Amino acid sequence: MQFDEIIKDTNYSDSNKPNLLDYKKQYENFDWYRDAFSKLDWLPDGGLNNAYECVDRHVKNGFGDKLALVWLGKNGEEENYTYKDFKDQSDKFGQVMINLGMEKGDRVFIFMDRLPELYFAAMGILKAGGVIAPLFSAFGPDPVKDRMLDAGAAYLVTSPDLRKKISPIIKDIKTLKEIIVVNKDNRFEDPLVDNDLDYEALMKDVNAESFKLVNTSQYDFSIMHYTSGSTGKPKGVLHRHQAVVQQMLTGHWALELSHGDIYFCTADPGWVTGTSYGMIAPWTNGVTQIIYEGGFSASSWYEIIQKYKVDVWYTAPTAIRLLMRSGEEVVNRYDLTSLKFIGSVGEPLNPEAVVWGERNYKLPIHDNWWQTETGAIMCANYSSTNIKPGSMGRPFPGITMGILDDQYNEIENEDSGILAVRPGWPSQMFAYWKQDDMHNSRFKKGWYITGDQASRDKEGYFWFQGRADDVINTAGHLVGPFEVESALIEHPAVAEAGVIGKPDPIAMEIVKAFVTLNPDYEQTDELRRELIRFSREKLSAGVAPREIDFLETMPKTRSGKIMRRLLKARELGEPEGDISTLEDD
Ligand code: PRX
Image (tube, rainbow, N blue to C red; front, side):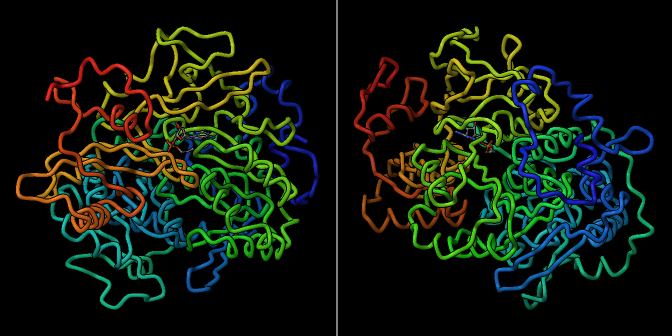
């Protein structure tokens, strides 16, 4: 059966056949235009819109009464929305934004927990031609300010609690025109501050029928996600509507999503997995998506899979390690036999986790690899191919990956080197917002340089070795050491700060800071706790250091750069390597 027939098929078949039946054949004969671009509906005059392909298309094709979204609130609420409901709600929000004067390309930040309104707003903004910039709701004021300032945010959609958390920084965002506050089920008293607008009131004033989708092209900007690098503040990765092509097809072939499936993705839209695979891929594939507002909980997650008969579950290695820790007895209490596919992304999936998954879920866990910059899955273990536990699989059809030496020449043997991709894939980032030099520096000798180290075996499977830079991967979230260092040195006690990732059996790495103190401050446990509290409040619990050590002097190069590599080597008791550039005391 052809892919477009599956998408339009009303008889949701429970075929056990993998969607990508013959990897090798598809890889060798693949054509983006024939096999992917042509499978979308497109707009009548050649335009392309992510949200149209996610929502409106299914209504137009007769699936309006199919469930698009099942929302499970943290207080036990459940709300169900069909594709028709979803279209109405997002059309209305699109109209709200048009009425507010939003223009094509305006950056609209969404800073809220996983509520249905987050998704209505996101789709509405996209339909009205805006660019969505979702932020992780756990962020403190500093990361929110940095990102909104950098992007020149025009609008903010948030909830009363988060709005208040960032109140002090709002006045600094001079480009901000309106703040729209979603007070879900009147959870908060006095939800509005100053001139904030009430979501419900705005939505009451518009009707879905009067909304006209703004004609976006495949080259118009759609989504902006901030990602961390080793130097400087996070960069805004700008994606275009055309990314939907790859998100849809990878959803179908690498995650086994088919029309009518029940899908559960545990990622938050504040990170790219939660938009590419928590919005675009599932809905373009016509699935019913379970959105769970709560965080990690082994029993709640299993309960969801059992109760809603989840077919496809996409999660992350840290979560899998936590599930392993919570034990096999917990798994055995639930019936998880509805599952047909489990995927994992974000960090290396250790072979033990694959084996444990196979034993407990009676299904292998399929690791796949990609980045904020790649926008969609690039390399995967597929349902129809052998899994090599510990490997992130083979390149998706249409994607060419290579391993390069330090001169950016391809290595043909199994040695490890720089993981690189041939540019030109549909979901490739268009830019780092206003950082052209940084963007251009990622392309060398006809390759996109990923920033990861990896190797490739004889059968073409790729094996992750580590990051080539100082970026920390904690529980699948990238943390830039500079962002944490900047927050720490704002504390009056701190003279200098150096931040590293310290290996951790569950979270892969935890954030560890080393600080030197200003005169008159003493190295006490109380100060250590105070610094952790201080940075948690500014950044978020996930980004703030979990451990802080005091140093008398900070190892720096003669040009004054903090030697994080040396801090890490000392922490791990490893050889210090080349310290010829170390500043003399
Ligand atoms: O270092 C790799 C790691 O996460 C980075 C991308 O993170 P981010 O831009 O936040 O995108 C998250 C969406 C996947 C990569 O450069 N990473 C991602 N997947 C894997 C991985 N490391 C090892 N194995 C993976 N499967």
